[in-house]
Length: 315
Image (cartoon, rainbow, N blue to C red; front, side):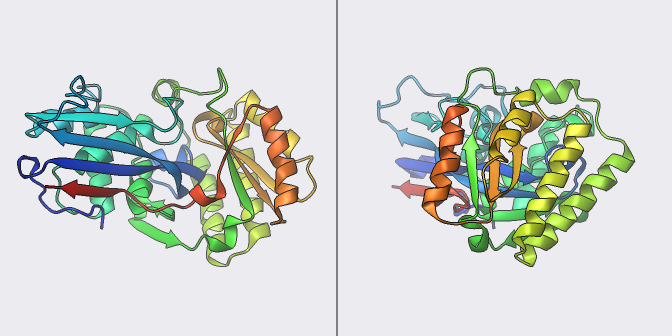
């Protein structure tokens, strides 16, 4: 189920806090816009929406979101009289980790009944029905942020699987790229100019994502790494890999024991994912040093595959 609350009435509460994780696509960028298969991880640190009734801590924050954003529209539609809000973005607006959908989940949780995550995702997509399919937000971010952990989702086939991730945790690292000046690709602008995929390209990418799913189910690290590289190369051939991400990939691959390197997100430029055949910290420190030289910021291992969105209420 999606949320912890049923029919929350703000008028009966004094304090509420929504906590929503970020997300990283391991496989499935762009394909998800067509309802294809994707593997997505929930990651920390969490986005937080604090709400207080009849208190002045956030007196200038009656509306913490843009009023025309999906989250802003939700707050406009429910009774928030005498409520003040504070939105905490742990990435300080750097982007690339699901901030927009985190806003929506946090606002939705204020006054929503528990629903299946796929239902909430479909509701979210209806807000963008004026756009062509390939330019609409996929809703996969939202599903992962509600569900938590590591998920495989293929909306066109109503296929949602919670994947085991402990076998993978010590072999994988994520490095944030959007802290570096000029690295972040504005996803909405980018999708607005993207012309989309042909059917053959969709079929090819779905084949890779299904193989990646099989590798996760079978806990086959080598095959998983191979599918990551296949997916990256397929997008690169379609012009959907940034130059910075290409450079990152080549440099990281020079490290002994690295099996795969793939950028994640729009133009594969939000996060750099590294998979290695080793676990020991000393060898990971060498990979970390490469990341620092490239201006990349590691996401702590304890913040991978975190729990889904949660809500805390005090009366």
